[in-house]
Structure formats: C-alpha cells, structure tokens
Image (cartoon, rainbow, N blue to C red; front, side):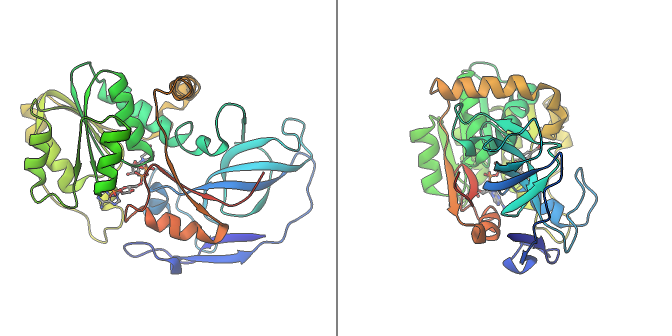
Length: 333
Ligand code: NDP
C-alpha cells in the first residue's frame, strides 16, 4: 500500500526529492469505518503553500506525514451504514493507494452525473472557484471585457467559458501557442495571449482589449497582472484567486503599486478562498452540471497514469505541463 509523505520542505520550485514513497500497513477495519481505494488523485497549486511552514489559510503539511488532497475513491469494504461497498466518494485524503477512513468529510458521488474525475475539477473545487470568483466578485455584465490569467488551467478554462455565457468579450492569458489555440478555437475565447512569447505584455493586453478591461480574474499575479491593471476601466472588478507566479519565491515579490489605479478607476480588488462560499456549493454544482450537460461548458483534463507519477504531475503545474485539470489516475473501479 504505497503512500507519499512530505520528505522535506521545498526551497523554491518543488522537486521529486521533497517527496518520499513509503509502504503503509493496513490496520483492521473498525465499526464506522470504510476502506477506500483511490481512483483519481488531484494535484493543485495550493498544495505548494501547504508544503511550506508559513502560516496560511490551511495548516502546513507535516514533514514525515502523508500529503493530503482531493481524491476520488471507491469504497471497497464498509462497516458504515451510509457508504456501502461499491460507492464512490470524494474527499480530502492522503496520497495513498488504500486508506481507512471514518467517513467524516466524505461526499458520495453519483457515477451517472459525469465521469468520476470531474468531481475533482469542473464539478469540484476548481469549478466552484471559477464560479464564485467570477460571478460574485467579477459580476460580469453583457458586453464587458473579462480577462483571465492562467486561462488554460482547471479554473481559468471555466472562468472564460462562464464569462462567454454571460455575454462578455473574453481574453485569456496562457503559456503556450497550443493553449492559445485551444482557448480561441475550442473554448470560444475572443482573444488569447501567449505570455511566454509576447515581447511586450502591456501592449499585448491593450491590443487584445480595445475597450479596456472591466473584470480581471487573476490566477497568477506579477507582471501579467500589472499589464491587465494598466488597461483597467472605471469601476473595474478584480478577483484575486491565485498568485502562482509567486508560490516558489524565496524572497517576497515587489512590483508595481496598484493603489493609484484602484483609486483612479474606482475599482474593486478582492481576494477570496473558495471555502468562503461553502454554504452555496450545492447550487453552484447544480448549475455547473447543467451547463456541462447542455454542452455549454467544454472540459479537458490532463491525466497521468500511475501512483508513481503524482509528484511529477504536481511539479508540472509550475511549468504549465497541463491543459485543463491535472489529475493522476491511480486505480480502476
Ligand atoms: P492550473 O490548472 O491553472 O495549473 C497551473 C497553471 O499555472 C499552469 O498550467 C501554468 O500554465 C500556470 N503557471 C504556472 N506558473 C506560472 C507563472 N509563473 N506565471 C504564470 N502562469 C503560471 O491550476 P488551477 O486551475 O488549479 O489553479 C489556478 C490558480 O487558482 C492557482 O493560482 C491556484 O492557486 C488558484 N486557486 C485558488 C483557489 C481559491 O480558493 N482562491 C482555489 C483553487 C485554485 P501556463 O502554461 O499558462 O503558464
């Protein structure tokens, strides 16, 4: 029964040496517990924060203890009334092939609604993040220009498509020509910018947004965000969702002061953590599932196969290996 533990805290970009594979013995199942077999394991940028010991909105992972994250798993044995053998669940579980769990925090997944892995993406945490950040903070109106950075990832692809559903002009910023083409040709973005090959990001953003920027959904921070803020319109809204360009910094980032822009533009900039909206998850999941079923949302995953691939899949988030949601398939149902 393989487990991945945090061997050491990264200094800068995480490496495979920060992770250690171990074997975990399986204790006997007690009354009230289930034995879970992991099927899909989610790797997410926020996990980088938990690998550090800095105080944040979730506790750091402990060195020598398993990494925890979103997992879709099958109940293979049960001594619990509410989750019978054969049921599929999603929850925050260790990076481990088989886990014994007392069912607290597990949610049943209906295999009829969508492929099981979708509950770690568009119908799970990243989908909810896109939904609430865009609709509650961004408040997009028809005809407005919405810019999203990290546009080809799990959250960004959903943000852009919901903005299109709301009648907006949508501009995505991502890190390769393939991603730019995917955003424009498959997801219906109006424009997309490859920030890695653009020589002048400020100019590229203003050219892609001739009417300025009304809503900015920020997944990355840094120079990309500075460029978008320079094109902001009066009463612009900025949802601070992620700052991935800083996650591996070893010294605090410095840069443009945004306050004068916010002042001049009467703009709103607001950070959020998806769990702020926990009480409304049910309604959002329903709407996302409906859009998906109606073909109004497209969805892509990048799936690595095999438990041993988990660290690599995680590290690849910081070099943009993924288009859409990055997952690792670790077991068959
Ligand atoms: P993604 O699927 O978007 O994967 C990360 C992507 O970030 C990569 O594919 C890469 O794409 C891009 N990236 C990596 N490094 C940089 C960099 N230095 N500059 C610019 N882009 C970079 O991940 P998610 O969709 O899961 O998450 C997106 C963001 O949302 C993250 O910042 C994450 O922390 C945040 N988040 C916040 C939540 C909240 O509650 N506030 C909840 C969930 C996610 P590319 O090829 O374009 O560089």
